Amino acid sequence: MGIKKQYLKSKPLCKVTFSVAAKEAEAVSVVGNFNEWNTEATSLKKLKNGTFKGTVDLEKDNEYEFRYLVDGAYTNDEQADSYKWNDYAAAENGVLSL
Image (cartoon, rainbow, N blue to C red; front, side, top):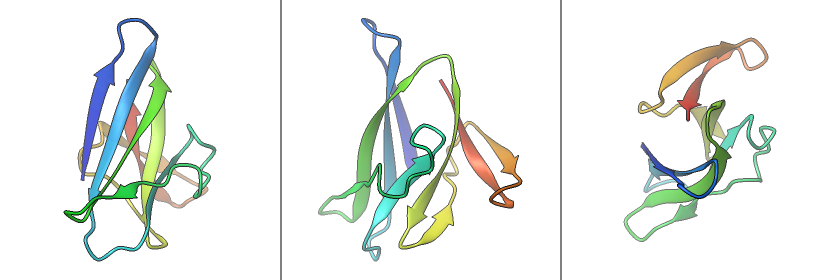
């Protein structure tokens, strides 16, 4: 798994690219408070090497909680900036600090 951040000079945005190595998976998406935890809003595209990848434009100077949904199972990214407990999910979410 991996996260790449690219800050734009012309706008207060950061292009965040999410990568998940999941060769056996059928579907991977990223859910978070930036897309109202909508499991269908940010699907990642499967590449030939088995990695799922997708980019989201997020406002900088914010923190975003997120998780991956891999074939219906939630998982965190070990490269998250930090982790935060979420009572609703009864689990820790990864946090992006932009």
